[in-house]
Length: 318
Ligand code: FAD
Picture (cartoon, protein in one colour):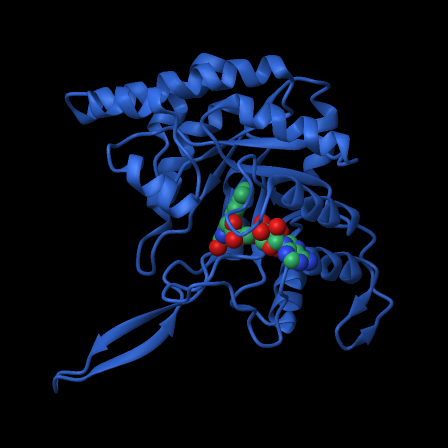
C-alpha cells in the first residue's frame, strides 16, 4: 500500500515507522531481523531501507602494492525489502539514488520493485563519493533527485528508456523525497532549498521525509515555510536518538545538522554510556510528544543498526 494511503487511513493518528541500513557484505540478515523484531509491536506500516553508494577500497596484493577497487560495502537494498515484506508483511521503501547508478540501472531496479509488489520508493540524489569534495553525477545517471522523480513517474506512464511501451502496470509508485529543516548543506539559504523541494514535489513526489533535527522549532518553521510556498504533501519528521558521546561529533559531521547546547552539555556531563542513552531517549520522547501534538502524520526513526532505544521511546509515545 502507498505511504499516502497509510496516512489517510490513520485519520490523523500519528504512525510509527523506521529506517534500517543494510548490513555490511558477509553479515547475516538474521542480525537485521534482531533489530526489526522489537519494533514490530508498534505496527510500522512501512520500513525504509537505505542504499549506500559505491566507494573505493584498497586491497593488499602481498608485494607491497595496493590495488584500488570500487565496491559497495552494503549492497542488497531491494533483496532486503523483499525479505522484510515477506517475513513481516509490512510495506518497504527502498531508497533509490542518483549517485552511483546509470539511468538504465535505475530502470532495472524499478522494474524489480514492480515485480516484488513494492509500492513506494524514496528518490534521493545521494552524497559525493568518499574522497570527492562535491557530488559529481555518475556518467549516464541523474544529477538531481528531481530528475529521478520524473524518471520514476515516466516509467509509471510506460515511458521506458528504450521508448514507450504499453505496459500492464496501472499502479504508480508513491514517491518520497528528502527535506532539510536546517537546509541542505549545499543550498545557499533555506528559502532556496525549499524552492528546490517544491520542484521535486511539482515533478511528482508524494511526500517528504526530513533529515534528523533536535529542535522542534526548526521543523515547525520548515513546515510553515513549505506550506507558504505551496508544498502541500505530507511532511514526515525524521528522529534520531543520541546514544553515544561519539554522536556529538559524528551526527553533525555526517548529516550536517546542529545539536542544541543544552543536549550537548547533558551528554558531556554524563558519567557513562547508559546515562547518555537515557538522555537521548528522554530528549527524543519530549520531541516526539510535541510533534504528535503538532499533528505530524508519522514519526520516522533512524535506527542506524540499533533499536533498543527506539523501542523505549515508542513505548512512551505510542
Ligand atoms: P536534491 O534534492 O537533488 O538536492 C541536492 C542539492 O542540490 C540541494 O542543496 C538542493 O538545494 C540543490 N538543488 C536541487 N535541485 C537543483 C537545481 N536544479 N539546481 C541547483 N541546485 C539544485 N543518502 C544515501 O546515500 N543513501 C540513502 O539511503 C539516503 N537516505 C536519505 C533519507 C533521508 C530522509 C534524507 C533526508 C537523506 C538521505 N540521504 C541518503 C542523504 C542524501 O542523499 C543527501 O542529503 C544528498 O546530499 C542530497 O540528496 P537530495 O535527494 O536531497 O538531493
